[in-house]
Image 1 (cartoon, rainbow, N blue to C red):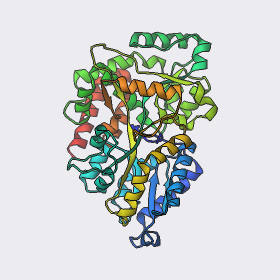
Image 2: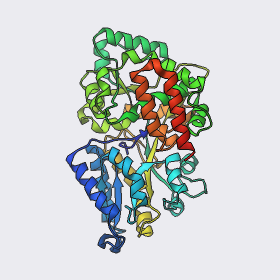
Image 3: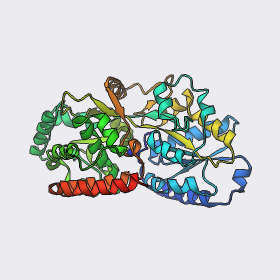
Image 4: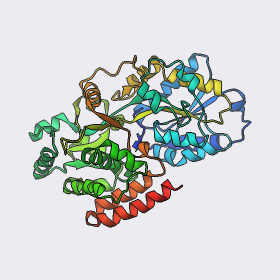
Length: 430
């Protein structure tokens, strides 16, 4: 499911392309979420699957999964596809409405746990009884504070600096391994008239959180990062300022146009050779032409301090369901199917394929890029999710504000961090 965020996370999200179809689905969802509880669809046992996977390939893949499930005779599912930013802002409304959609594409970890703590998510422990092959790490990630499973993983993916191999060859440059090598690469590309670093902050400001996450786990380590996002550390701590001091070294190499358009346009700029590289999750490939996939490569976020154990962002995507579903049996049947080998392999084959299936028996795409991504995650000492996935959807806007301010006015970092801490405290205090 390579359209989720993000990211994480508004990362983190995977965010798809906003089109007329997605807008139409959004209207349909609003009607579904607000209709009376005794609708004919609910009475007939139909299931509504609310999806933010709106990029063309991901949407097509989800449509195939729903069609295949409906052929099994275990229920009838209707897919509603909504532009991801609309989905994100409307998700609390969907879940708290009188007649909510039954199943949702979204994230594991703290985001799902937050909704579960408000008794908004269906207990799907019954589904997990048939998922004995899944690793304990995914079971733990899918379990709420009360010990119930509330999430069913579909796949995970990785973040990295993506680039076109043909462009790096044309420019005579190679992948950097250290921060010093990375800055040297940026300087070389800038000298060739190429904006080194793409960024898409337009209506997807959460993309900047990837920079904060990675710099923090490279400078201060994953444990400090998790504590910070859980409110156990302060955003105005000198350790956090050190993150921004390091980030400031790279700011002169950002594409100045990237603040005006979303990540999808930043993807287009990268593929067209108008920028050199882009720190992004693999979901961006769902917005890339199929014929460009073979030319894509990536390198891990450069090492800054060799003494800090290497962590990588590996967001896990999947599904949770409404506690108010009128058809819990049908909802669990759908989730069981979505966790299966056949469903996850079908999704990978129909989408861009640059994700790793959650089901350990499902085969990932047979490509050097996927093998490289899996090897990177396997070699990491720790894995994080993404800013909002390791914190909450409520904390993400505080990051969006602070990080975009920093990119515009890096000389005001002290004031920005004080404001961020104040905003974060309001979120943590509820």
